[in-house]
Every structure is written in structure tokens, then in C-alpha cells.
Image 1 (cartoon, one colour):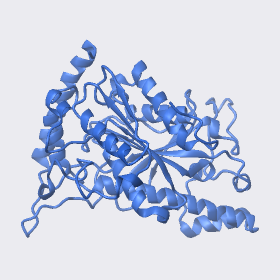
Image 2: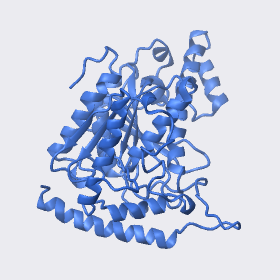
Image 3: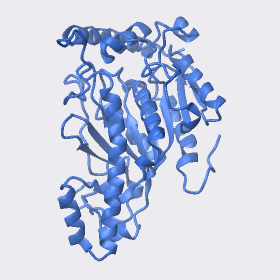
Image 4: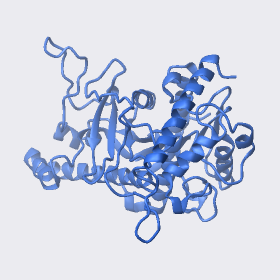
Length: 415
């Protein structure tokens, strides 16, 4: 069973969450349009974090864990943002700053555009890219919270990968499909970055040199080329990782990637990881009945969160965003990427996540389930549980499986 500390914190957490959800429902009900329908608010700037949620600043210098971070705003018409996590071992081509009296930090990465000649020669080691979607029941959380920053640093370090944490728009200010559209937009942005980087290499190899590179950057906009991805990212080894409601977004993005096919090249989604996905349905499962009042996120509060996320005229617990097994939710499951699903013993959502993995395995998709005993929802990503041995073990277990699909040497990693 969970510890006394976890149980007490769960009571406090649920009290605050219930208050927040009711407050949001009171102040942001669906707004009827002149025709009597309700608006989804899927467009517009929106917000990506709550003012009362503390954020953790980015650090473009390498801290003691050897991971540098930076924040990006990639959409001029919305608040969609990204936080990039770059692990230190990837830096082969760009030269780090040396510590001195004015710069005591270790291994500061000062570059915006790494050495073009070195990049063209592929001197810099390429790293897989993990696109991460945080949790928070669609209405809270952020990609730059202290808990999400800690978790993504851990993922970047253990997987030796660039992590792109997505700050998607929150409900109810931006209802469905805003968060899902943001996820797809990031996937296309990653492809654009890869193509721009190739343009830069072509200009250098054709004799354009640095001036040619600068001309290309000016033509597309000064902020068009993201240097960390240009120098170190390998989009052909892209992994989607979603936490709680972020798993729903990741699964949606994976489906859109399958539908797009070669249209998103050179991006290739080779795998996805769904950590305790925020799935629900109209017909309750055994765990939904037995654990309806479970820790941190009970079923009644999660149903309220879905009411805040889905437009009023679309509200249904069998909405395609909520239930992964509703009929007609394309594409065919057999085309889905390998999918690792993480579940917790004391989480009412566990059975539906397991059922999804079973359906994937029926059509020969690699879709194992990692179930953790005595664990609760968000046991590996919640602030107070991040440093527990179980949270660390979960990330290491995820890495073992993911490395089957991101290793350049083949599938030598396996259970």
C-alpha cells in the first residue's frame, strides 16, 4: 500500500484540485454562439500554465546533471511553447566555454549556431528526439514546472536524447482540440527544422559558406533554425512520451503521424510511451469501479476535467480523445508505432490502458505493459514522488524498452 505520507498528500492534493476544477467551471463555462451552439475555443492564444503554478527557469548552461535547457515560442498566433533539454555528452562539435573567473559554470553551451563546417561534416553526434507532453488533466501543469523540468532532465540523461517538452494550450480557455492540434504542430515544426538544417548543409557544401548559411537564415527568419536540433537532433528517431492526459495527446499525435506517412519526413515516429494514460469510457471497467476514489485523481474529478476540456456539444466519455477503443477511431491499430504503456496498481485508469495494449498486441504491435505495485497515478512524475526509487526505476525501465527503437546498432536492447 502507498505510504502514510502519500495518503496524506493525496487528500490535500485532491482538495486543491477539486477547488480548482470547480472554480474553472464557474468562471469558464462553454459560451453559446448566436446560433445556440457552444464554442470550443480551439483557436486563440490561450495559456500554457496557471499563474499560481510555480515555473522553473531554463538554464542554457550545463548544470550538475549535465543537461542544458532553453525555451522557445514557435507559434506567432498562440501561446504554444517548447522547452528543449540537451544532454552534455552530445556536444562533440561545438566548443563549450571554459570556466574562468567571470564564468565559473562548468561546460556552458554558448552557441546559437554551431560550427557550420562541423555540422556539414556530421562531426556532431546525432541524438534521438523525444517529444514530451506533461500531465495535469488538460487544465493544469506546464512544460516548465519544476516537476516536469526534473522529469525531462532525467529522461534526457538516461536516454541520451534531446527532449522537447511541449507547453500546449490548457482548457477551459482553449478546449478540445487545441492541445491535440498543438501536439501535431510540434511534430510538423520538428520536420521543418530538419529540412532547414539540411538546406544549411547544402549551402555550405555548394560553396556558400557561412554567408550562404546566413542568407538562408535571413530568408526564413532569424529564429527559423533551432541550433541545438540542427547540430544534434535526429528526427528519424522520434519518440512520443505522454504523461497522464499528455499520453492522450501523444497517442493522437502518433495517429496523425501514421496518417501523414511520408508527408512528415524526415520525421519518423519510431515508438511512443504512454504513462498512466488519462483514458475513460462510458462503460466502467473493474478498476474504475473498485478504485473510483483512488489517490490524487479520482474518477469524479477526472470526469469534471473532461467537461472542462471537451466542448459542451461534444461531451462524452466515449469521445475519441477519451476512449482509445471507440469504433472508427482511425487509423487501423496495426499501423500504430510500438507502444509502451505504464500503469500503477492503485490507479482507477489502469484497466482501460491495459485493454488498449491488448488490442494493439492482437494486431502484432509491440505494446508491453509495465505495471508498478503499490504505485499511484503519476508516481514517476508527481513533485513529491520524483526522487523515490520507484520513480527512478520507472525511467530506467522505459529507457531499456525505448532503446530498442532508437539504437543505431539494432534491437540489442530488450527485456
